[in-house]
Length: 309
Image (tube, rainbow, N blue to C red):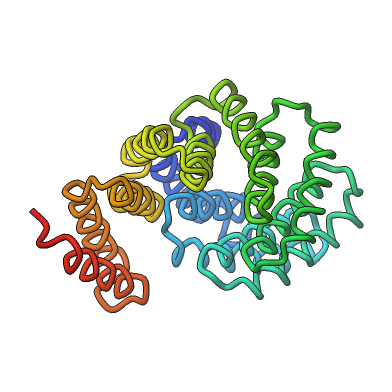
């Protein structure tokens, strides 16, 4: 069951993988006990799937539970405990808890360097994860240094076309774009996208992230026609893979709406802004900070362009 769920996850079929992993976790809890290593592994995998689908509250709860169990059963420096620390940090990062995420990623990295070595794939993963947190905090010079280190290590250890190498290429491009190195960033985005389309498929979530990143860069460069085409591709793919109210899908709705407004296609832009607002109300509630911000944007849009059809 676990192997089938892993295959579904690799193909981007996250809801189906989640259902199988819930069954596996329930079976492990019933037959092995709540703190058995197999149960904790199932818990960790389910939390990962929940995170990928934007179900962050439950993902955090499960990751904390898995981490506590592994610390008790395996010890603080065991590789699987370090994996739980890293995975919890990623959830916290997505929830905006960047200081705690950074602290945990540094803990995971230090442990992996000691236990596994500097060039182990898991150590390189921690370097990349830490760099992403630093990038979100605006610590761009350290983020660039770490992403280049992770990329060089993955090219050597895993090969140029390995999915984790391609992910490092994409992450480095994000940092370079924020540093204003747009030409290098565009080349890396295109390289990552070409590899991910070949290795993972055009609809895989990682591929769609690269499509989105390239679209945002092209928009920034004023290449609006190609940017629009890519934004539409991402939105369609995320609707199919993640559903209409997943946070990443709603982000794509917003990105396309913003581009269309800039191009003067205000009718469709207004409809998309309204759709995103309704999705955020469903996802977070009407009084969430992001929902209120988008409501203010919609009011601004209507003052400028009139009522939405």
